[in-house]
Length: 311
Ligand SMILES: [Zn+2]
Image (tube, rainbow, N blue to C red; front, side, top):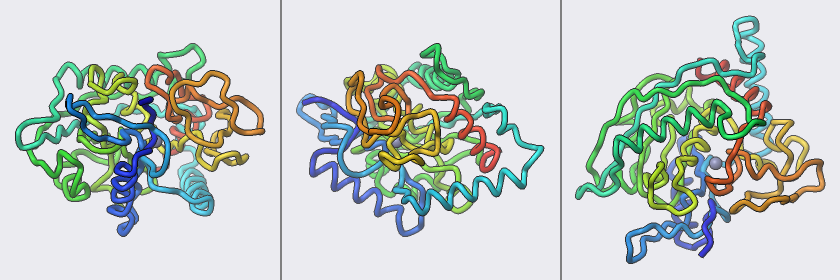
């Protein structure tokens, strides 16, 4: 069965709906790279991630109307900070402390090695420095490992009671990236920066533990899920946000695309608007090996978001 970052199975869809419901009442910004999709464990113990397409999402749904309000709030905040912002540089210009929370089962399943965590930090630093392609933007951010803790709890391991466990274990301030490693039906789920003021206690990203470098998920075990989810945490939408519209993902140099990409289909062109689909962009749903870049437009947006909500 081909793998993709989207949910396809009924079971995965049910989990996705549940995950969204769990946060909707409190207005949480939760995003799921439906990413660790279709996670049924087969006989070999390997998650059978059905596909990265389909229903659900690794970020909470943002309607066109809400997207407008979010954009207006961003501009208002930037105007208020005028002169004091680094946003115009298109570089975040910050060091981000990263806390890993390894959520183990009672019997210890779901662990990762220190080497995998170190490699994950290296992947983040390479990706955000534009290290995978000569055309990739350098976002001007440095990730440093601030801490690793481990909990043994079957519910938390499966990402149940997510709001509870995040409140109980989150560390650092609004500039700290918390990464909870779990075993669930997604590759990852992220919160957005504009929700920090309301939901700071659960701010961060949840990532399938087996997606770390050296993990067991074929096509998704190079550590790029964390880079993708961190992109949302910095305020980036999917490149297919809004579909074939001029507004699309609020970034002008990522061509519009109608839907998420699965695999690495060279030449895909899903909208009549100019440009091929940005299948190599970290904010699409392509295979880890297909991810090559953030654009300068995304660097601009991320640096504006940082100045407005996380600096
Ligand atoms: Zn995503």
